[in-house]
Image (cartoon, rainbow, N blue to C red; front, side, top):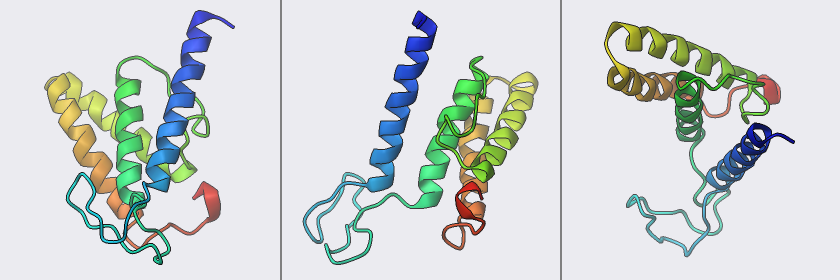
Length: 136
């Protein structure tokens, strides 16, 4: 394996672990406060402290959008841990950020990534999980 291939494998493994950790959330005492000041649900709730899907989507799209703008290729959406629908969001965000970077600067593109990723992910998950199976 080449050095570049090894780095990419390590980066993908790290992202997969981060994504799994974000999706699973952190367990804790009933009513405990997390670092953001949010109160966690009781241990009997179905998902005591899981990251909401729209917030997780926003984080992942922001991460991959920034990577794409720095010259990293998109790659396969599955290797990024994205669904087909999330990959569509990524493409929209990156296209808009590239245009913003040409029109304004990198800082403006970075702000656009945060804003568009949040808007599009909130729209996608406004009614909970989208229907259409795991590829939706």
